[in-house]
Image (tube, rainbow, N blue to C red; front, side, top):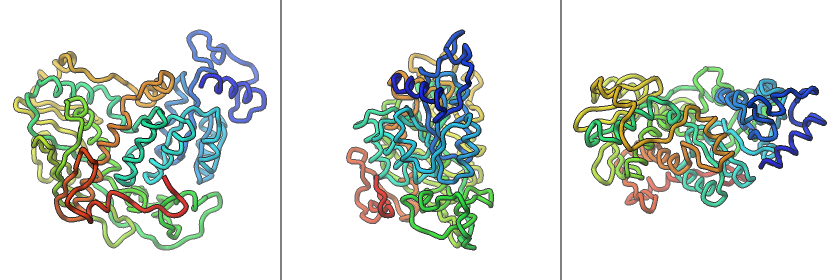
Length: 439
């Protein structure tokens, strides 16, 4: 890895192929006074230059990494990011970026239906990856993604940043160390989805918008504002079933990931087996994913987790700790702890003090999800939000979606990883891909 970076820096300093390095080399570039020289930095390629890609500035602000190339089939978006990252290289096609030996790792910030195909392509090209949440467009994609670390032995970081938030770690450590007693119930909720949107009018594809590549494996459909340009401000691509399963995963991935972080360290190491509930699906408009949901999920040991959208959660208020737009609430025999992005709440104020020294069971410490990824690319260690955990949490979202779409309870065989006793529900584990795309 280090040799390719040194060759890269030498070539770009001479001819400016990928980045605009200064003619007069400063002590910072040379690595003096505590700075990391470019030859020892992790070279990041950014794939997907929409709104979410703005977080990649974290690589530029970290001395151990640098963004050296950006890619997006929408020219206007990639050129904006190109300028942000010091006039680095830019590509329309991700395959051109992945062909660069100098790129060590990629940050995938595309629409959901590209997450697993791009992650697999990156792994096969020998790149490590940070992939935004959620993971796959289907359970089948999630399972296929294991190839990334099991076969290619790549570093994979999942983009559910709460694992790098101190209050989340401290709250879960309280639960792990028994300060609320035995966990009896769990509540997880996230922002509701959107309905509406229109496929009309069909409009000409703008110059510089590679619509064929933008669609990728998704069905061929007419180009329109709500589908492709987000003119409504409602992020339509997250609510169209061709590209995603909606906020039940697109936002639900965050609090479910916090649940899974606990489960992975509480000796459960699995996901619920039974899913039963109801929800509403956007009908009559372009947006056709689940807008509201309330699903009861039961683990093999009988532990129950209730997964809801925020509107339902706040209207029925099943527990005093359930409030706000999202969260993960653990209810025990001696109290409760709620963790979320904006902070954490506990049933007894003394738990805040105990949280500083909760006991022997401790979680990995990270204060920045992106920097943790870079450090792991350099060390070869899997990051704080590893792929296997991401697969488990993402499947919870998919099974909740499937039981709502089928309108009946479903059962998940955790050992064999399949829906059992329901042929129609089991078919939903897989989604077709438009020719010639494959994973």
